Length: 129
Image (cartoon, rainbow, N blue to C red; front, side):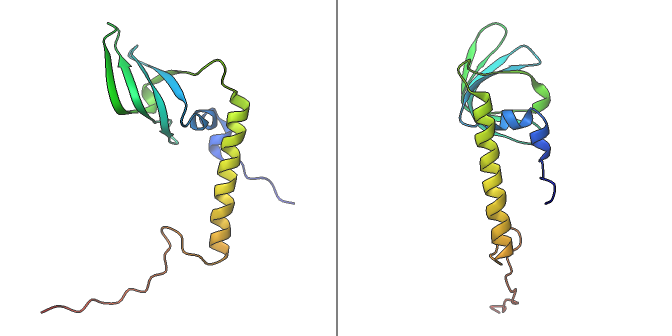
């Protein structure tokens, strides 16, 4: 029985932040502004994409944005709803990652082509001239 593979993101709070997909959050930035919106995606650098976002400056002037990208190094805090079950959210996210990894490894083992390794025979094109 081998060791269980633990992803780098599962050893940090990144797993929790990635599990917040489709959840409305309030991001507090280093320059004391806030952005509230629905999480579209979070990458390994904790860069966050939000949709239907509301950007609020220190003066309180809100600016509605259909989509916004926030660099991870600009984040100070991520506020979530009090009634959010963080443990269940993370477990569901880990289950999705495990399912995706299993499907990928099964497709590789069965010889199915996957993005990036398509075995297409390249034939030279004939010149129309």
